[in-house]
Image (cartoon, rainbow, N blue to C red; front, top):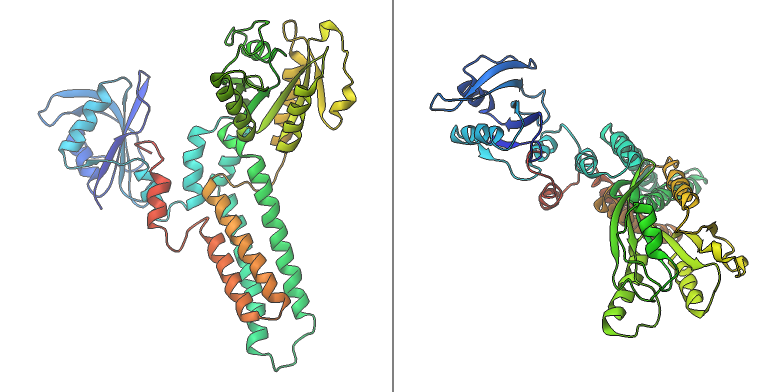
Length: 442
């Protein structure tokens, strides 16, 4: 196996920078640069030299002997002084010694190929680096421990058992088999299907925990959407005026609420657009609703008209989690709040105090975090569950007609789909796609 190397820490100035090497020649390269006999799993303070004998740095060098390393190969890490230059100089010397620069995600890919991690753990590593909430970090840490792997193996075993029951029917159709055997298959399959459906629904609902929740502020022009955004950010990010249509495009900003980092989107006012630019802004607002996890529907306390009605219908039809904000309560509440029945209502004056709104958003995010289902953390995993469910649905049709050979065929397809979450049968193309999204050095 070729020896690969990369800087495993971000660019910039810091206390420490790490250069990582993995492969058959990792140890010999490290010895050339340190002139020391490195012992496994012991941090050695050493001078690091260039091949021309010039001193580069004094660093901690750690050798991990195969197979007891992250990749399952010989691995050496140089923990040098952070900065723009030192780690690059060490990497250049490592490459001169015969290593090649690692591709994005190649260290994790080797760990996967060498059986050190499965596909779920590999994806958890990538997502853990990017997660935008404490909740997401906890979910991914559980996946790193193998929680999702155990879940998949349990479902797989149950499906194999169901297929075995079916094969008994096929092979011993003439024998005196228990009359309840068919009912047992139906009951077992229903339980598996219910678990997969619940997992899928929970995972799609909670992708925001991993990728960061997207919150869209929507409403007609001049109801105070930009004032709410500015209050949440505690700065004048959006222009505020009494002229309807001031915000002509979506404005996006990140904000921390409790333990959650969310992306909040202030949209253009939704109404019949008067010019082409405003029309584009309105269309983007509708798209923002479709792409959001949570909607903040803003309405003025002193007026509710047909434009407001259309916006409320958009929110209802979106089937997204939503909070209704009645803004400008300092003008007096002159609208019938029963219009918003079924939604949580927050009454504020954005220019004075939005604490109730912040509290409501936090409570909503915390409520999402309190769920304890198994969560799929990538689109690939979600697609495999959908594929397995489709195969189970097809299998049920043949079970109802007694066509057990075709029933078993589709159950086998479901087993293949669910197995691909951890270690698929045909995965070369999927590997390149999966690990290609990693950062270099990981």
